[in-house]
Image (cartoon, rainbow, N blue to C red; front, side, top):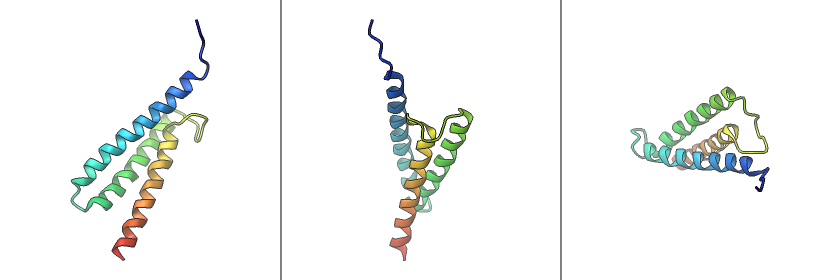
Length: 94
């Protein structure tokens, strides 16, 4: 029987990407119904998602920026998206 030594790592990264994409779609849907506007709602939801992913990463004792994607990478992505959208919102309103 063939042995695939890198398969579990690849599956973990794929799971992290799918998890990130699904959460992002859910956040976009909730932000669309936000009472404070889409942009501000999305930034708030991204900040909460970043905090949630950091807590989960710490609880699972995952190493930040490991060779496979994990909750810490999701934290960085949520924070980066939140900063980008916040800057865009600020530039549009000024």
